[in-house]
Image (cartoon, rainbow, N blue to C red):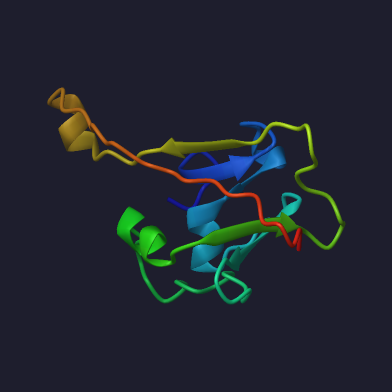
Length: 118
């Protein structure tokens, strides 16, 4: 799930140049897309947090608790009045796809604007 077409992505558009692959980021394969990720509770970077794992599940991401999406070193990122997208590209095995199997998932996301704006 580390290439540009797969994973869980966040950004200003669905274009890979305007978004970041969260799964790849947590594996330590950072791609600068105007955003950095932090642990929302303690402010530590999430870059490489799961780099030792071969796969990252949605439970792993949920276990992080809050994830803070912040501006990168270029001071770009989300601004008031702009739109951001969070989207998934599930990875389904070829054997299941050829059998006509599908994936159904219910995801719940809660978004909060941080009053501290950091």
